[in-house]
Length: 321
Image 1 (cartoon, one colour):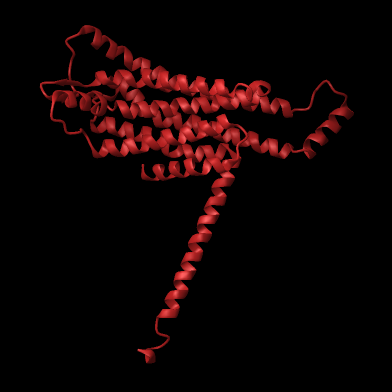
Image 2 (tube, rainbow, N blue to C red):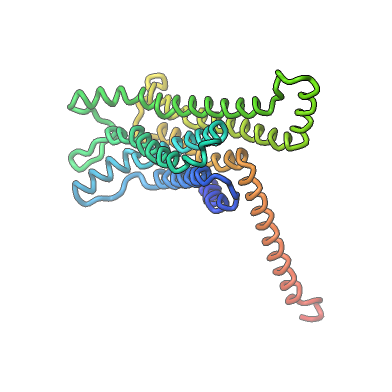
């Protein structure tokens, strides 16, 4: 998680240097890095602090239902997942609906913010029911006296499977696939043109930058596969453990060793997302390479300067001692 924290801090710092034409895309990418940074920090804190101390029932209730239930963590994780979908939909808007994209960027931004908030609350809000504060104690293994709460807890397992796992995967896969198909279709010569016109059109397309377009398609394809694979792998263990705990032979208990393993695997996605953004956004990747070269040059210069000072200060021979 420490590496993920560093990568996301670098992403937040370097993304403005990418010179992206779309302000919406830049905002979404920075929001993604901020969400992933928060996920990494929350993961470290959850493994470090199991429960906050409290001195009254109000503090105990808040500590139990907001921290011990991991509500804040899953809220950040849900926001990160929703933002990934927004990034993919943003590319769909910019590619397929390019004529109206610039004019409606503010509307798209508002829509993404509202959708992200609703999605995060819908996913993480019911997590407060995973624990119960009673008799000055936060219990993670309990059975509610209210049948409606127990029924909702049972249904929420499958709602979580659909909302948090299946829906984002389907959305990312469909949108990325449609964007790549749309770009490839535009690059393909028109079949109804005469053969000579097709040859000239293909030659002009090749000379005017088909290589660049192919690189864009390749970057989108790699980014799509990366997002899909990471979402599927990182989110699968905890999601299926929560939805089908009877298959695992143990009860899903917040804070248990099995549950913390799923939480850690889930957080790995936040550490990999900056790399996937660099793969799918060439301008950001170039900014990262330039920053890395600058950092290496700076370290090399500092090392050479320190070595020269050390060589000048030390005795040249034993006779000088």
